[in-house]
Length: 236
Image (tube, rainbow, N blue to C red; front, side, top):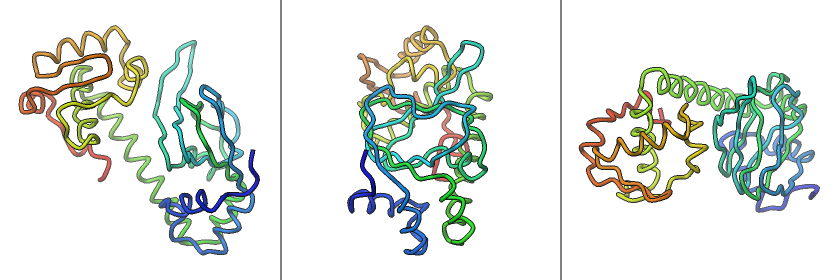
């Protein structure tokens, strides 16, 4: 554990949308109680139902948000650097709705939740940035719900692959960012259903070799998937 933040970490934190426009004094006050810790893989950081003690910022590595109910578990999201998670619980001083664990060795900043709420009341730019961030999160939840409710499992997988292709610079070949077991959970499928869905997408020009995806017929895949920016674009 390291008390205080190195200049490099402070610079990364300052570049986040949440912090980039806030007053220097308020930013310094917020960072004063912040510390950074290195976590090994598969460490549970928070448990759903617990109260929010910290706002977390992933500086390196990756974190999985997941939820459990009645002996069932579902992966909800993957947090990559540099970004925050559990913002809503921090602002509301409410219980976590999800658990979180590291997927790999991760370096994470922990900002005391009470400090975040205190600066929220003092800094209008910070408060506005938080409202914007929460609005984006809400819209992402709506899009994800539409994806789950309006599309078949095969359509969800096809559109997920098209989104991953865009993240990869529209390359015809790219690596899946998630292992297939976790991808199935994110898409609301069983691993067996995911395997069958990959086989069914062969007729639309999708080839799979381990985690390597090849799209050999872009037009046919897009014709089947019918991507919609009101579901698939996270920039609006």
